[in-house]
Length: 154
Length: 402
Image (tube, rainbow over all chains, first blue to last red; front, side, top):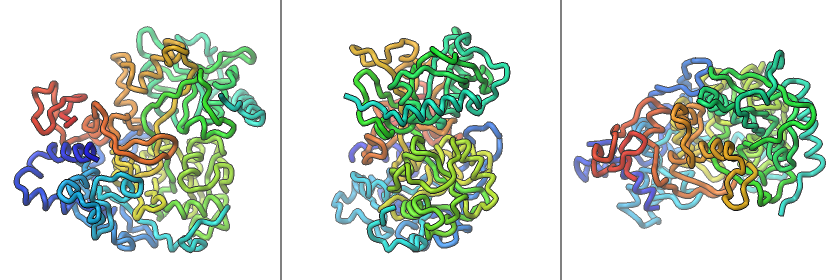
C-alpha cells in the first residue's frame, strides 16, 4: 500500500506545479482525479502506433456513442470526473493513494462515484479503484439468461 | 514429480507437427534453407502470441556479430511445453527472421531433428492439459507482460463486454441469449491448448475445452476472421494482446473494454480504446494479463538454462542479461505491445492470480510512456544529479521516484 502511494507521489511530482502549488490545489486535484472517466472524454495523444507493419493510423473510435445499451450513465458510480485525459497521460492510475493519505479509514474509501479511493489491497479494490482511466460499463441486463446470481453450468 | 503429458496430447502434438511439416506452418516453404545451416540457431517452440515480439528480436539478433538466428515453431502454447517436456525432435519447417525483420522459412530434418531449446507461452505450464507439475530439470522464466483481448470488427457498434456476457457467448454459442453474440459461426475461438483461450476461459469461468465457435487455429487466424467477418455486428474473437494491437493499428478491429466479475466498469488494456500506454494492464484494472513464460532445461546447480546461448537469450527477456548493444530490447518489447516488468505497478502469481501492489526496484514507467505514447511528463536525465528531490533517481533516461 505504501509503495503504491509512493508511486502516486512520484507521478504527482513529475507533473511539476500541478499538485505542489498549495494544499488547496492538491486537494482539489485529488478530488478531480477520483473516479473513472467516461470513454467519450478527450483521449491522450497517440503519438506512437505499435506493430507498425501496416503503418496505419490508429482509429480514434473510443466514443461510446455506438454502445447500444451501455452508456456511461448506466453505471453512474464509475463515471465521475473530467480529469481522465490528464490522468491517463501522466500515469495517475494510482492517484487513489492521495485520498488514502488524507483519510486512511477504509470505511470512507468507497466514493460517491462508487470507486475505491484508498490504496487497493484486494482484487475488488484494484479493479474498481479511482484511477482516472477511461472505462466503459457493460449493462449486464443484456445477459438475458442470467439473473444476477450464480452462473449456470455450461 | 511430474505427470507426463498424456498420450493423447503427445498424439496431438505429433499430429500438429505433421501438419506443420505439410503446410509449412503458414509460412512460405519454397526454397527454404536448412535450419541447421543458419548462424547459431536457437530453437524455440510455443504459442503464436509471441511471434510479433520474436520477429523484432530475431531480426535484431540476426544483425549482431556474431549473428544468432531465432528459429521458432508456433503450434500453440501447450504443444510447445509438451515438446520440451517430452524432448520431441523438431521436424517440418520453422520460422526465422532476417535482418530486415522479414519472416523466412527453414526446414528441419524429418527424423532426429533438434530438440527445442526453449518453449515460449503466455500461460504457465500447469494450465496445460496433462501437465500438473513442472519437472525439476525445467525452469520457468518470466518475460514481459502480455494482455489477452476480446475483439470485434471495426464496424461493430460494441465497445465493452462483461465476464458474464462472455461466459454465455462462448459457453452457449447461438443459445447465449446475449445479443449480438449469439451467432455460432461469428464466434472465433481457439482450442484448449491456446494461451489466449486458456486465459479468457479462466477469466470468464468457461472450460477452455468447452468454447463454442469456429476454431481459427492461431491468433492471426482470429484476427483475420474477425476483421473480415461478413456479419460484423455479431462477430467476437479472442487474441493475444500483441496481435490485437496489430489489428487495431491496421484499423480493422476494436478491442473491447472488459468488465471482470465484481468490476463496475469495463477497462481496456490501455487508458482509452485508442491509446497504447497499457495503463489498464499496468495498474491492474484490465484483468486479463500475464507475463510471458520461457521454459528450458536447466542446470541443476545454477538453476539457469543449461545452454549458455539459451541462458543469454532468455536472460534478455527476464532483464537479467543485458542484450547486445545493438539490440534495444526494451523498445522492441514496448513496440510489440508487451510491458517490461519494471513498468508494472501491480503483479500477480500464477495465471490470473490475485493482484498485489508492485514497486520495481528500478522502475521504468517514464521510459515506457515515452516509447509507447511518444511523450512523458517525466524529466529527462543523464544521471541522478539532474533529477530533483521529488523524483531523484535517473532510470533509463528519466527521473523516477524510486
